[in-house]
Length: 84
Image 1 (cartoon, one colour):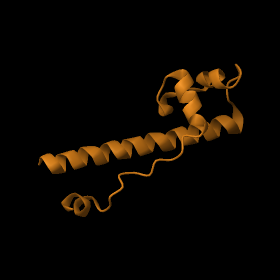
Image 2 (cartoon, rainbow, N blue to C red; image 1 turned 45 degrees about the vertical axis):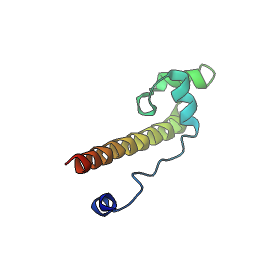
Image 3 (cartoon, rainbow, N blue to C red; image 1 turned 120 degrees about the vertical axis):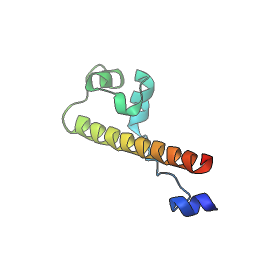
């Protein structure tokens, strides 16, 4: 397949597990990378995440944001390759 030769592999990106991010995303009706600390009250009994819990949450949100950005670039590049 020419496109695989051009892009070096079949998989577009490795998608990490949503874990607890999914609950916050669904409850807040926001993308993972747009959840703020105040939003976490909705999934934590009215108390916002803080300290190490919030720091880990932010780290995972940033990882997801990077994966989505990378995936978007791969899709655009593939489209441009196919369309010419």
